Length: 113
Image (tube, rainbow, N blue to C red; front, side, top):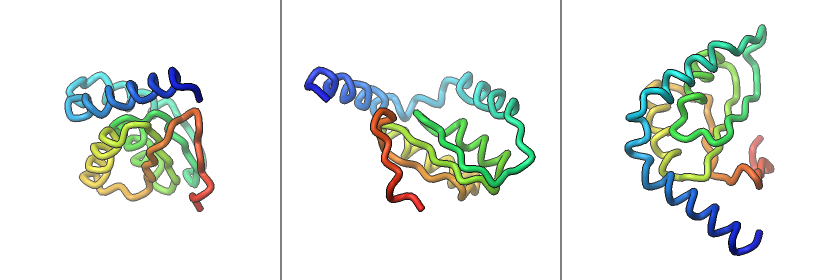
């Protein structure tokens, strides 16, 4: 990755870190996550699900509610967004989401078993 690309990624990460605490004020994110997950149908809930750019975890949390036996991996570049997602996950009593700070263009799942 060249310097310009790194600067862009750093700006994206910093922007989302800065807005993380106010991000959930937009109720549209919550409503659209619920609608999106409602459209997913599976006879089996022993799934491995990858949620890229999870933000504060709306979709991952809705997936965990719908598929309690699934292993959900929620990835975001912003640690602050994931901190909020982790808090919300704990508040909901959900334990099948693994949050990972990663760049979606350079995913690394070697340590996940």
